[in-house]
Image 1 (cartoon, rainbow, N blue to C red):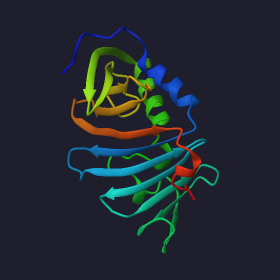
Image 2 (cartoon, rainbow, N blue to C red; image 1 turned 60 degrees about the horizontal axis):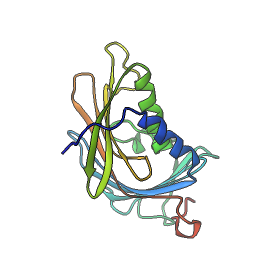
Image 3 (cartoon, rainbow, N blue to C red; image 1 turned 30 degrees about the vertical axis):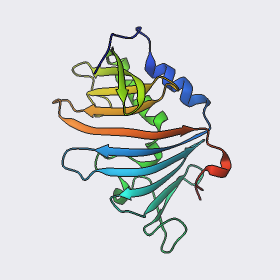
Image 4 (tube, helix red, strand yellow; image 1 turned 120 degrees about the vertical axis):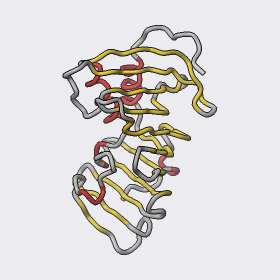
Length: 201
């Protein structure tokens, strides 16, 4: 349930500032979209762009990592550090999401860049305070103006955690108002100690 409107502030820029100063994060991503199987991933990110995805469903047990230095993706179909291993380009169709997302553009920072691009050609509405699971969040809607569709998304709904300012739920729509994807970000941990980070290589 949405409560009284929050002060009119730029939650997207505030989230970008939070992202700019963090070193890493780990989160459980739960994605649903029309016509596609639900996806659940243990996701890890470390600057300047290392990514690790451990799949829970589908492809349970598979692990995928991205190295920004080599600009290559490694895929372990049967789990991290097992054989066989495939080395792929991040634009390889085998590892694109059903929505066309690339692993090298899958982090929160890349999302915020897309949302900000939509803001430049659209309208931002601060809806109010909401609850996502057990977390208090600020609900914001960014809608593109007609004729300015830049990222393939016409409308973003975002819920920003009030404690750290980063998004914990995102829903996107296309130009015909059809749902594209809804992503829940559960158990988001920021600046995880190095000893607790799953290895990226």
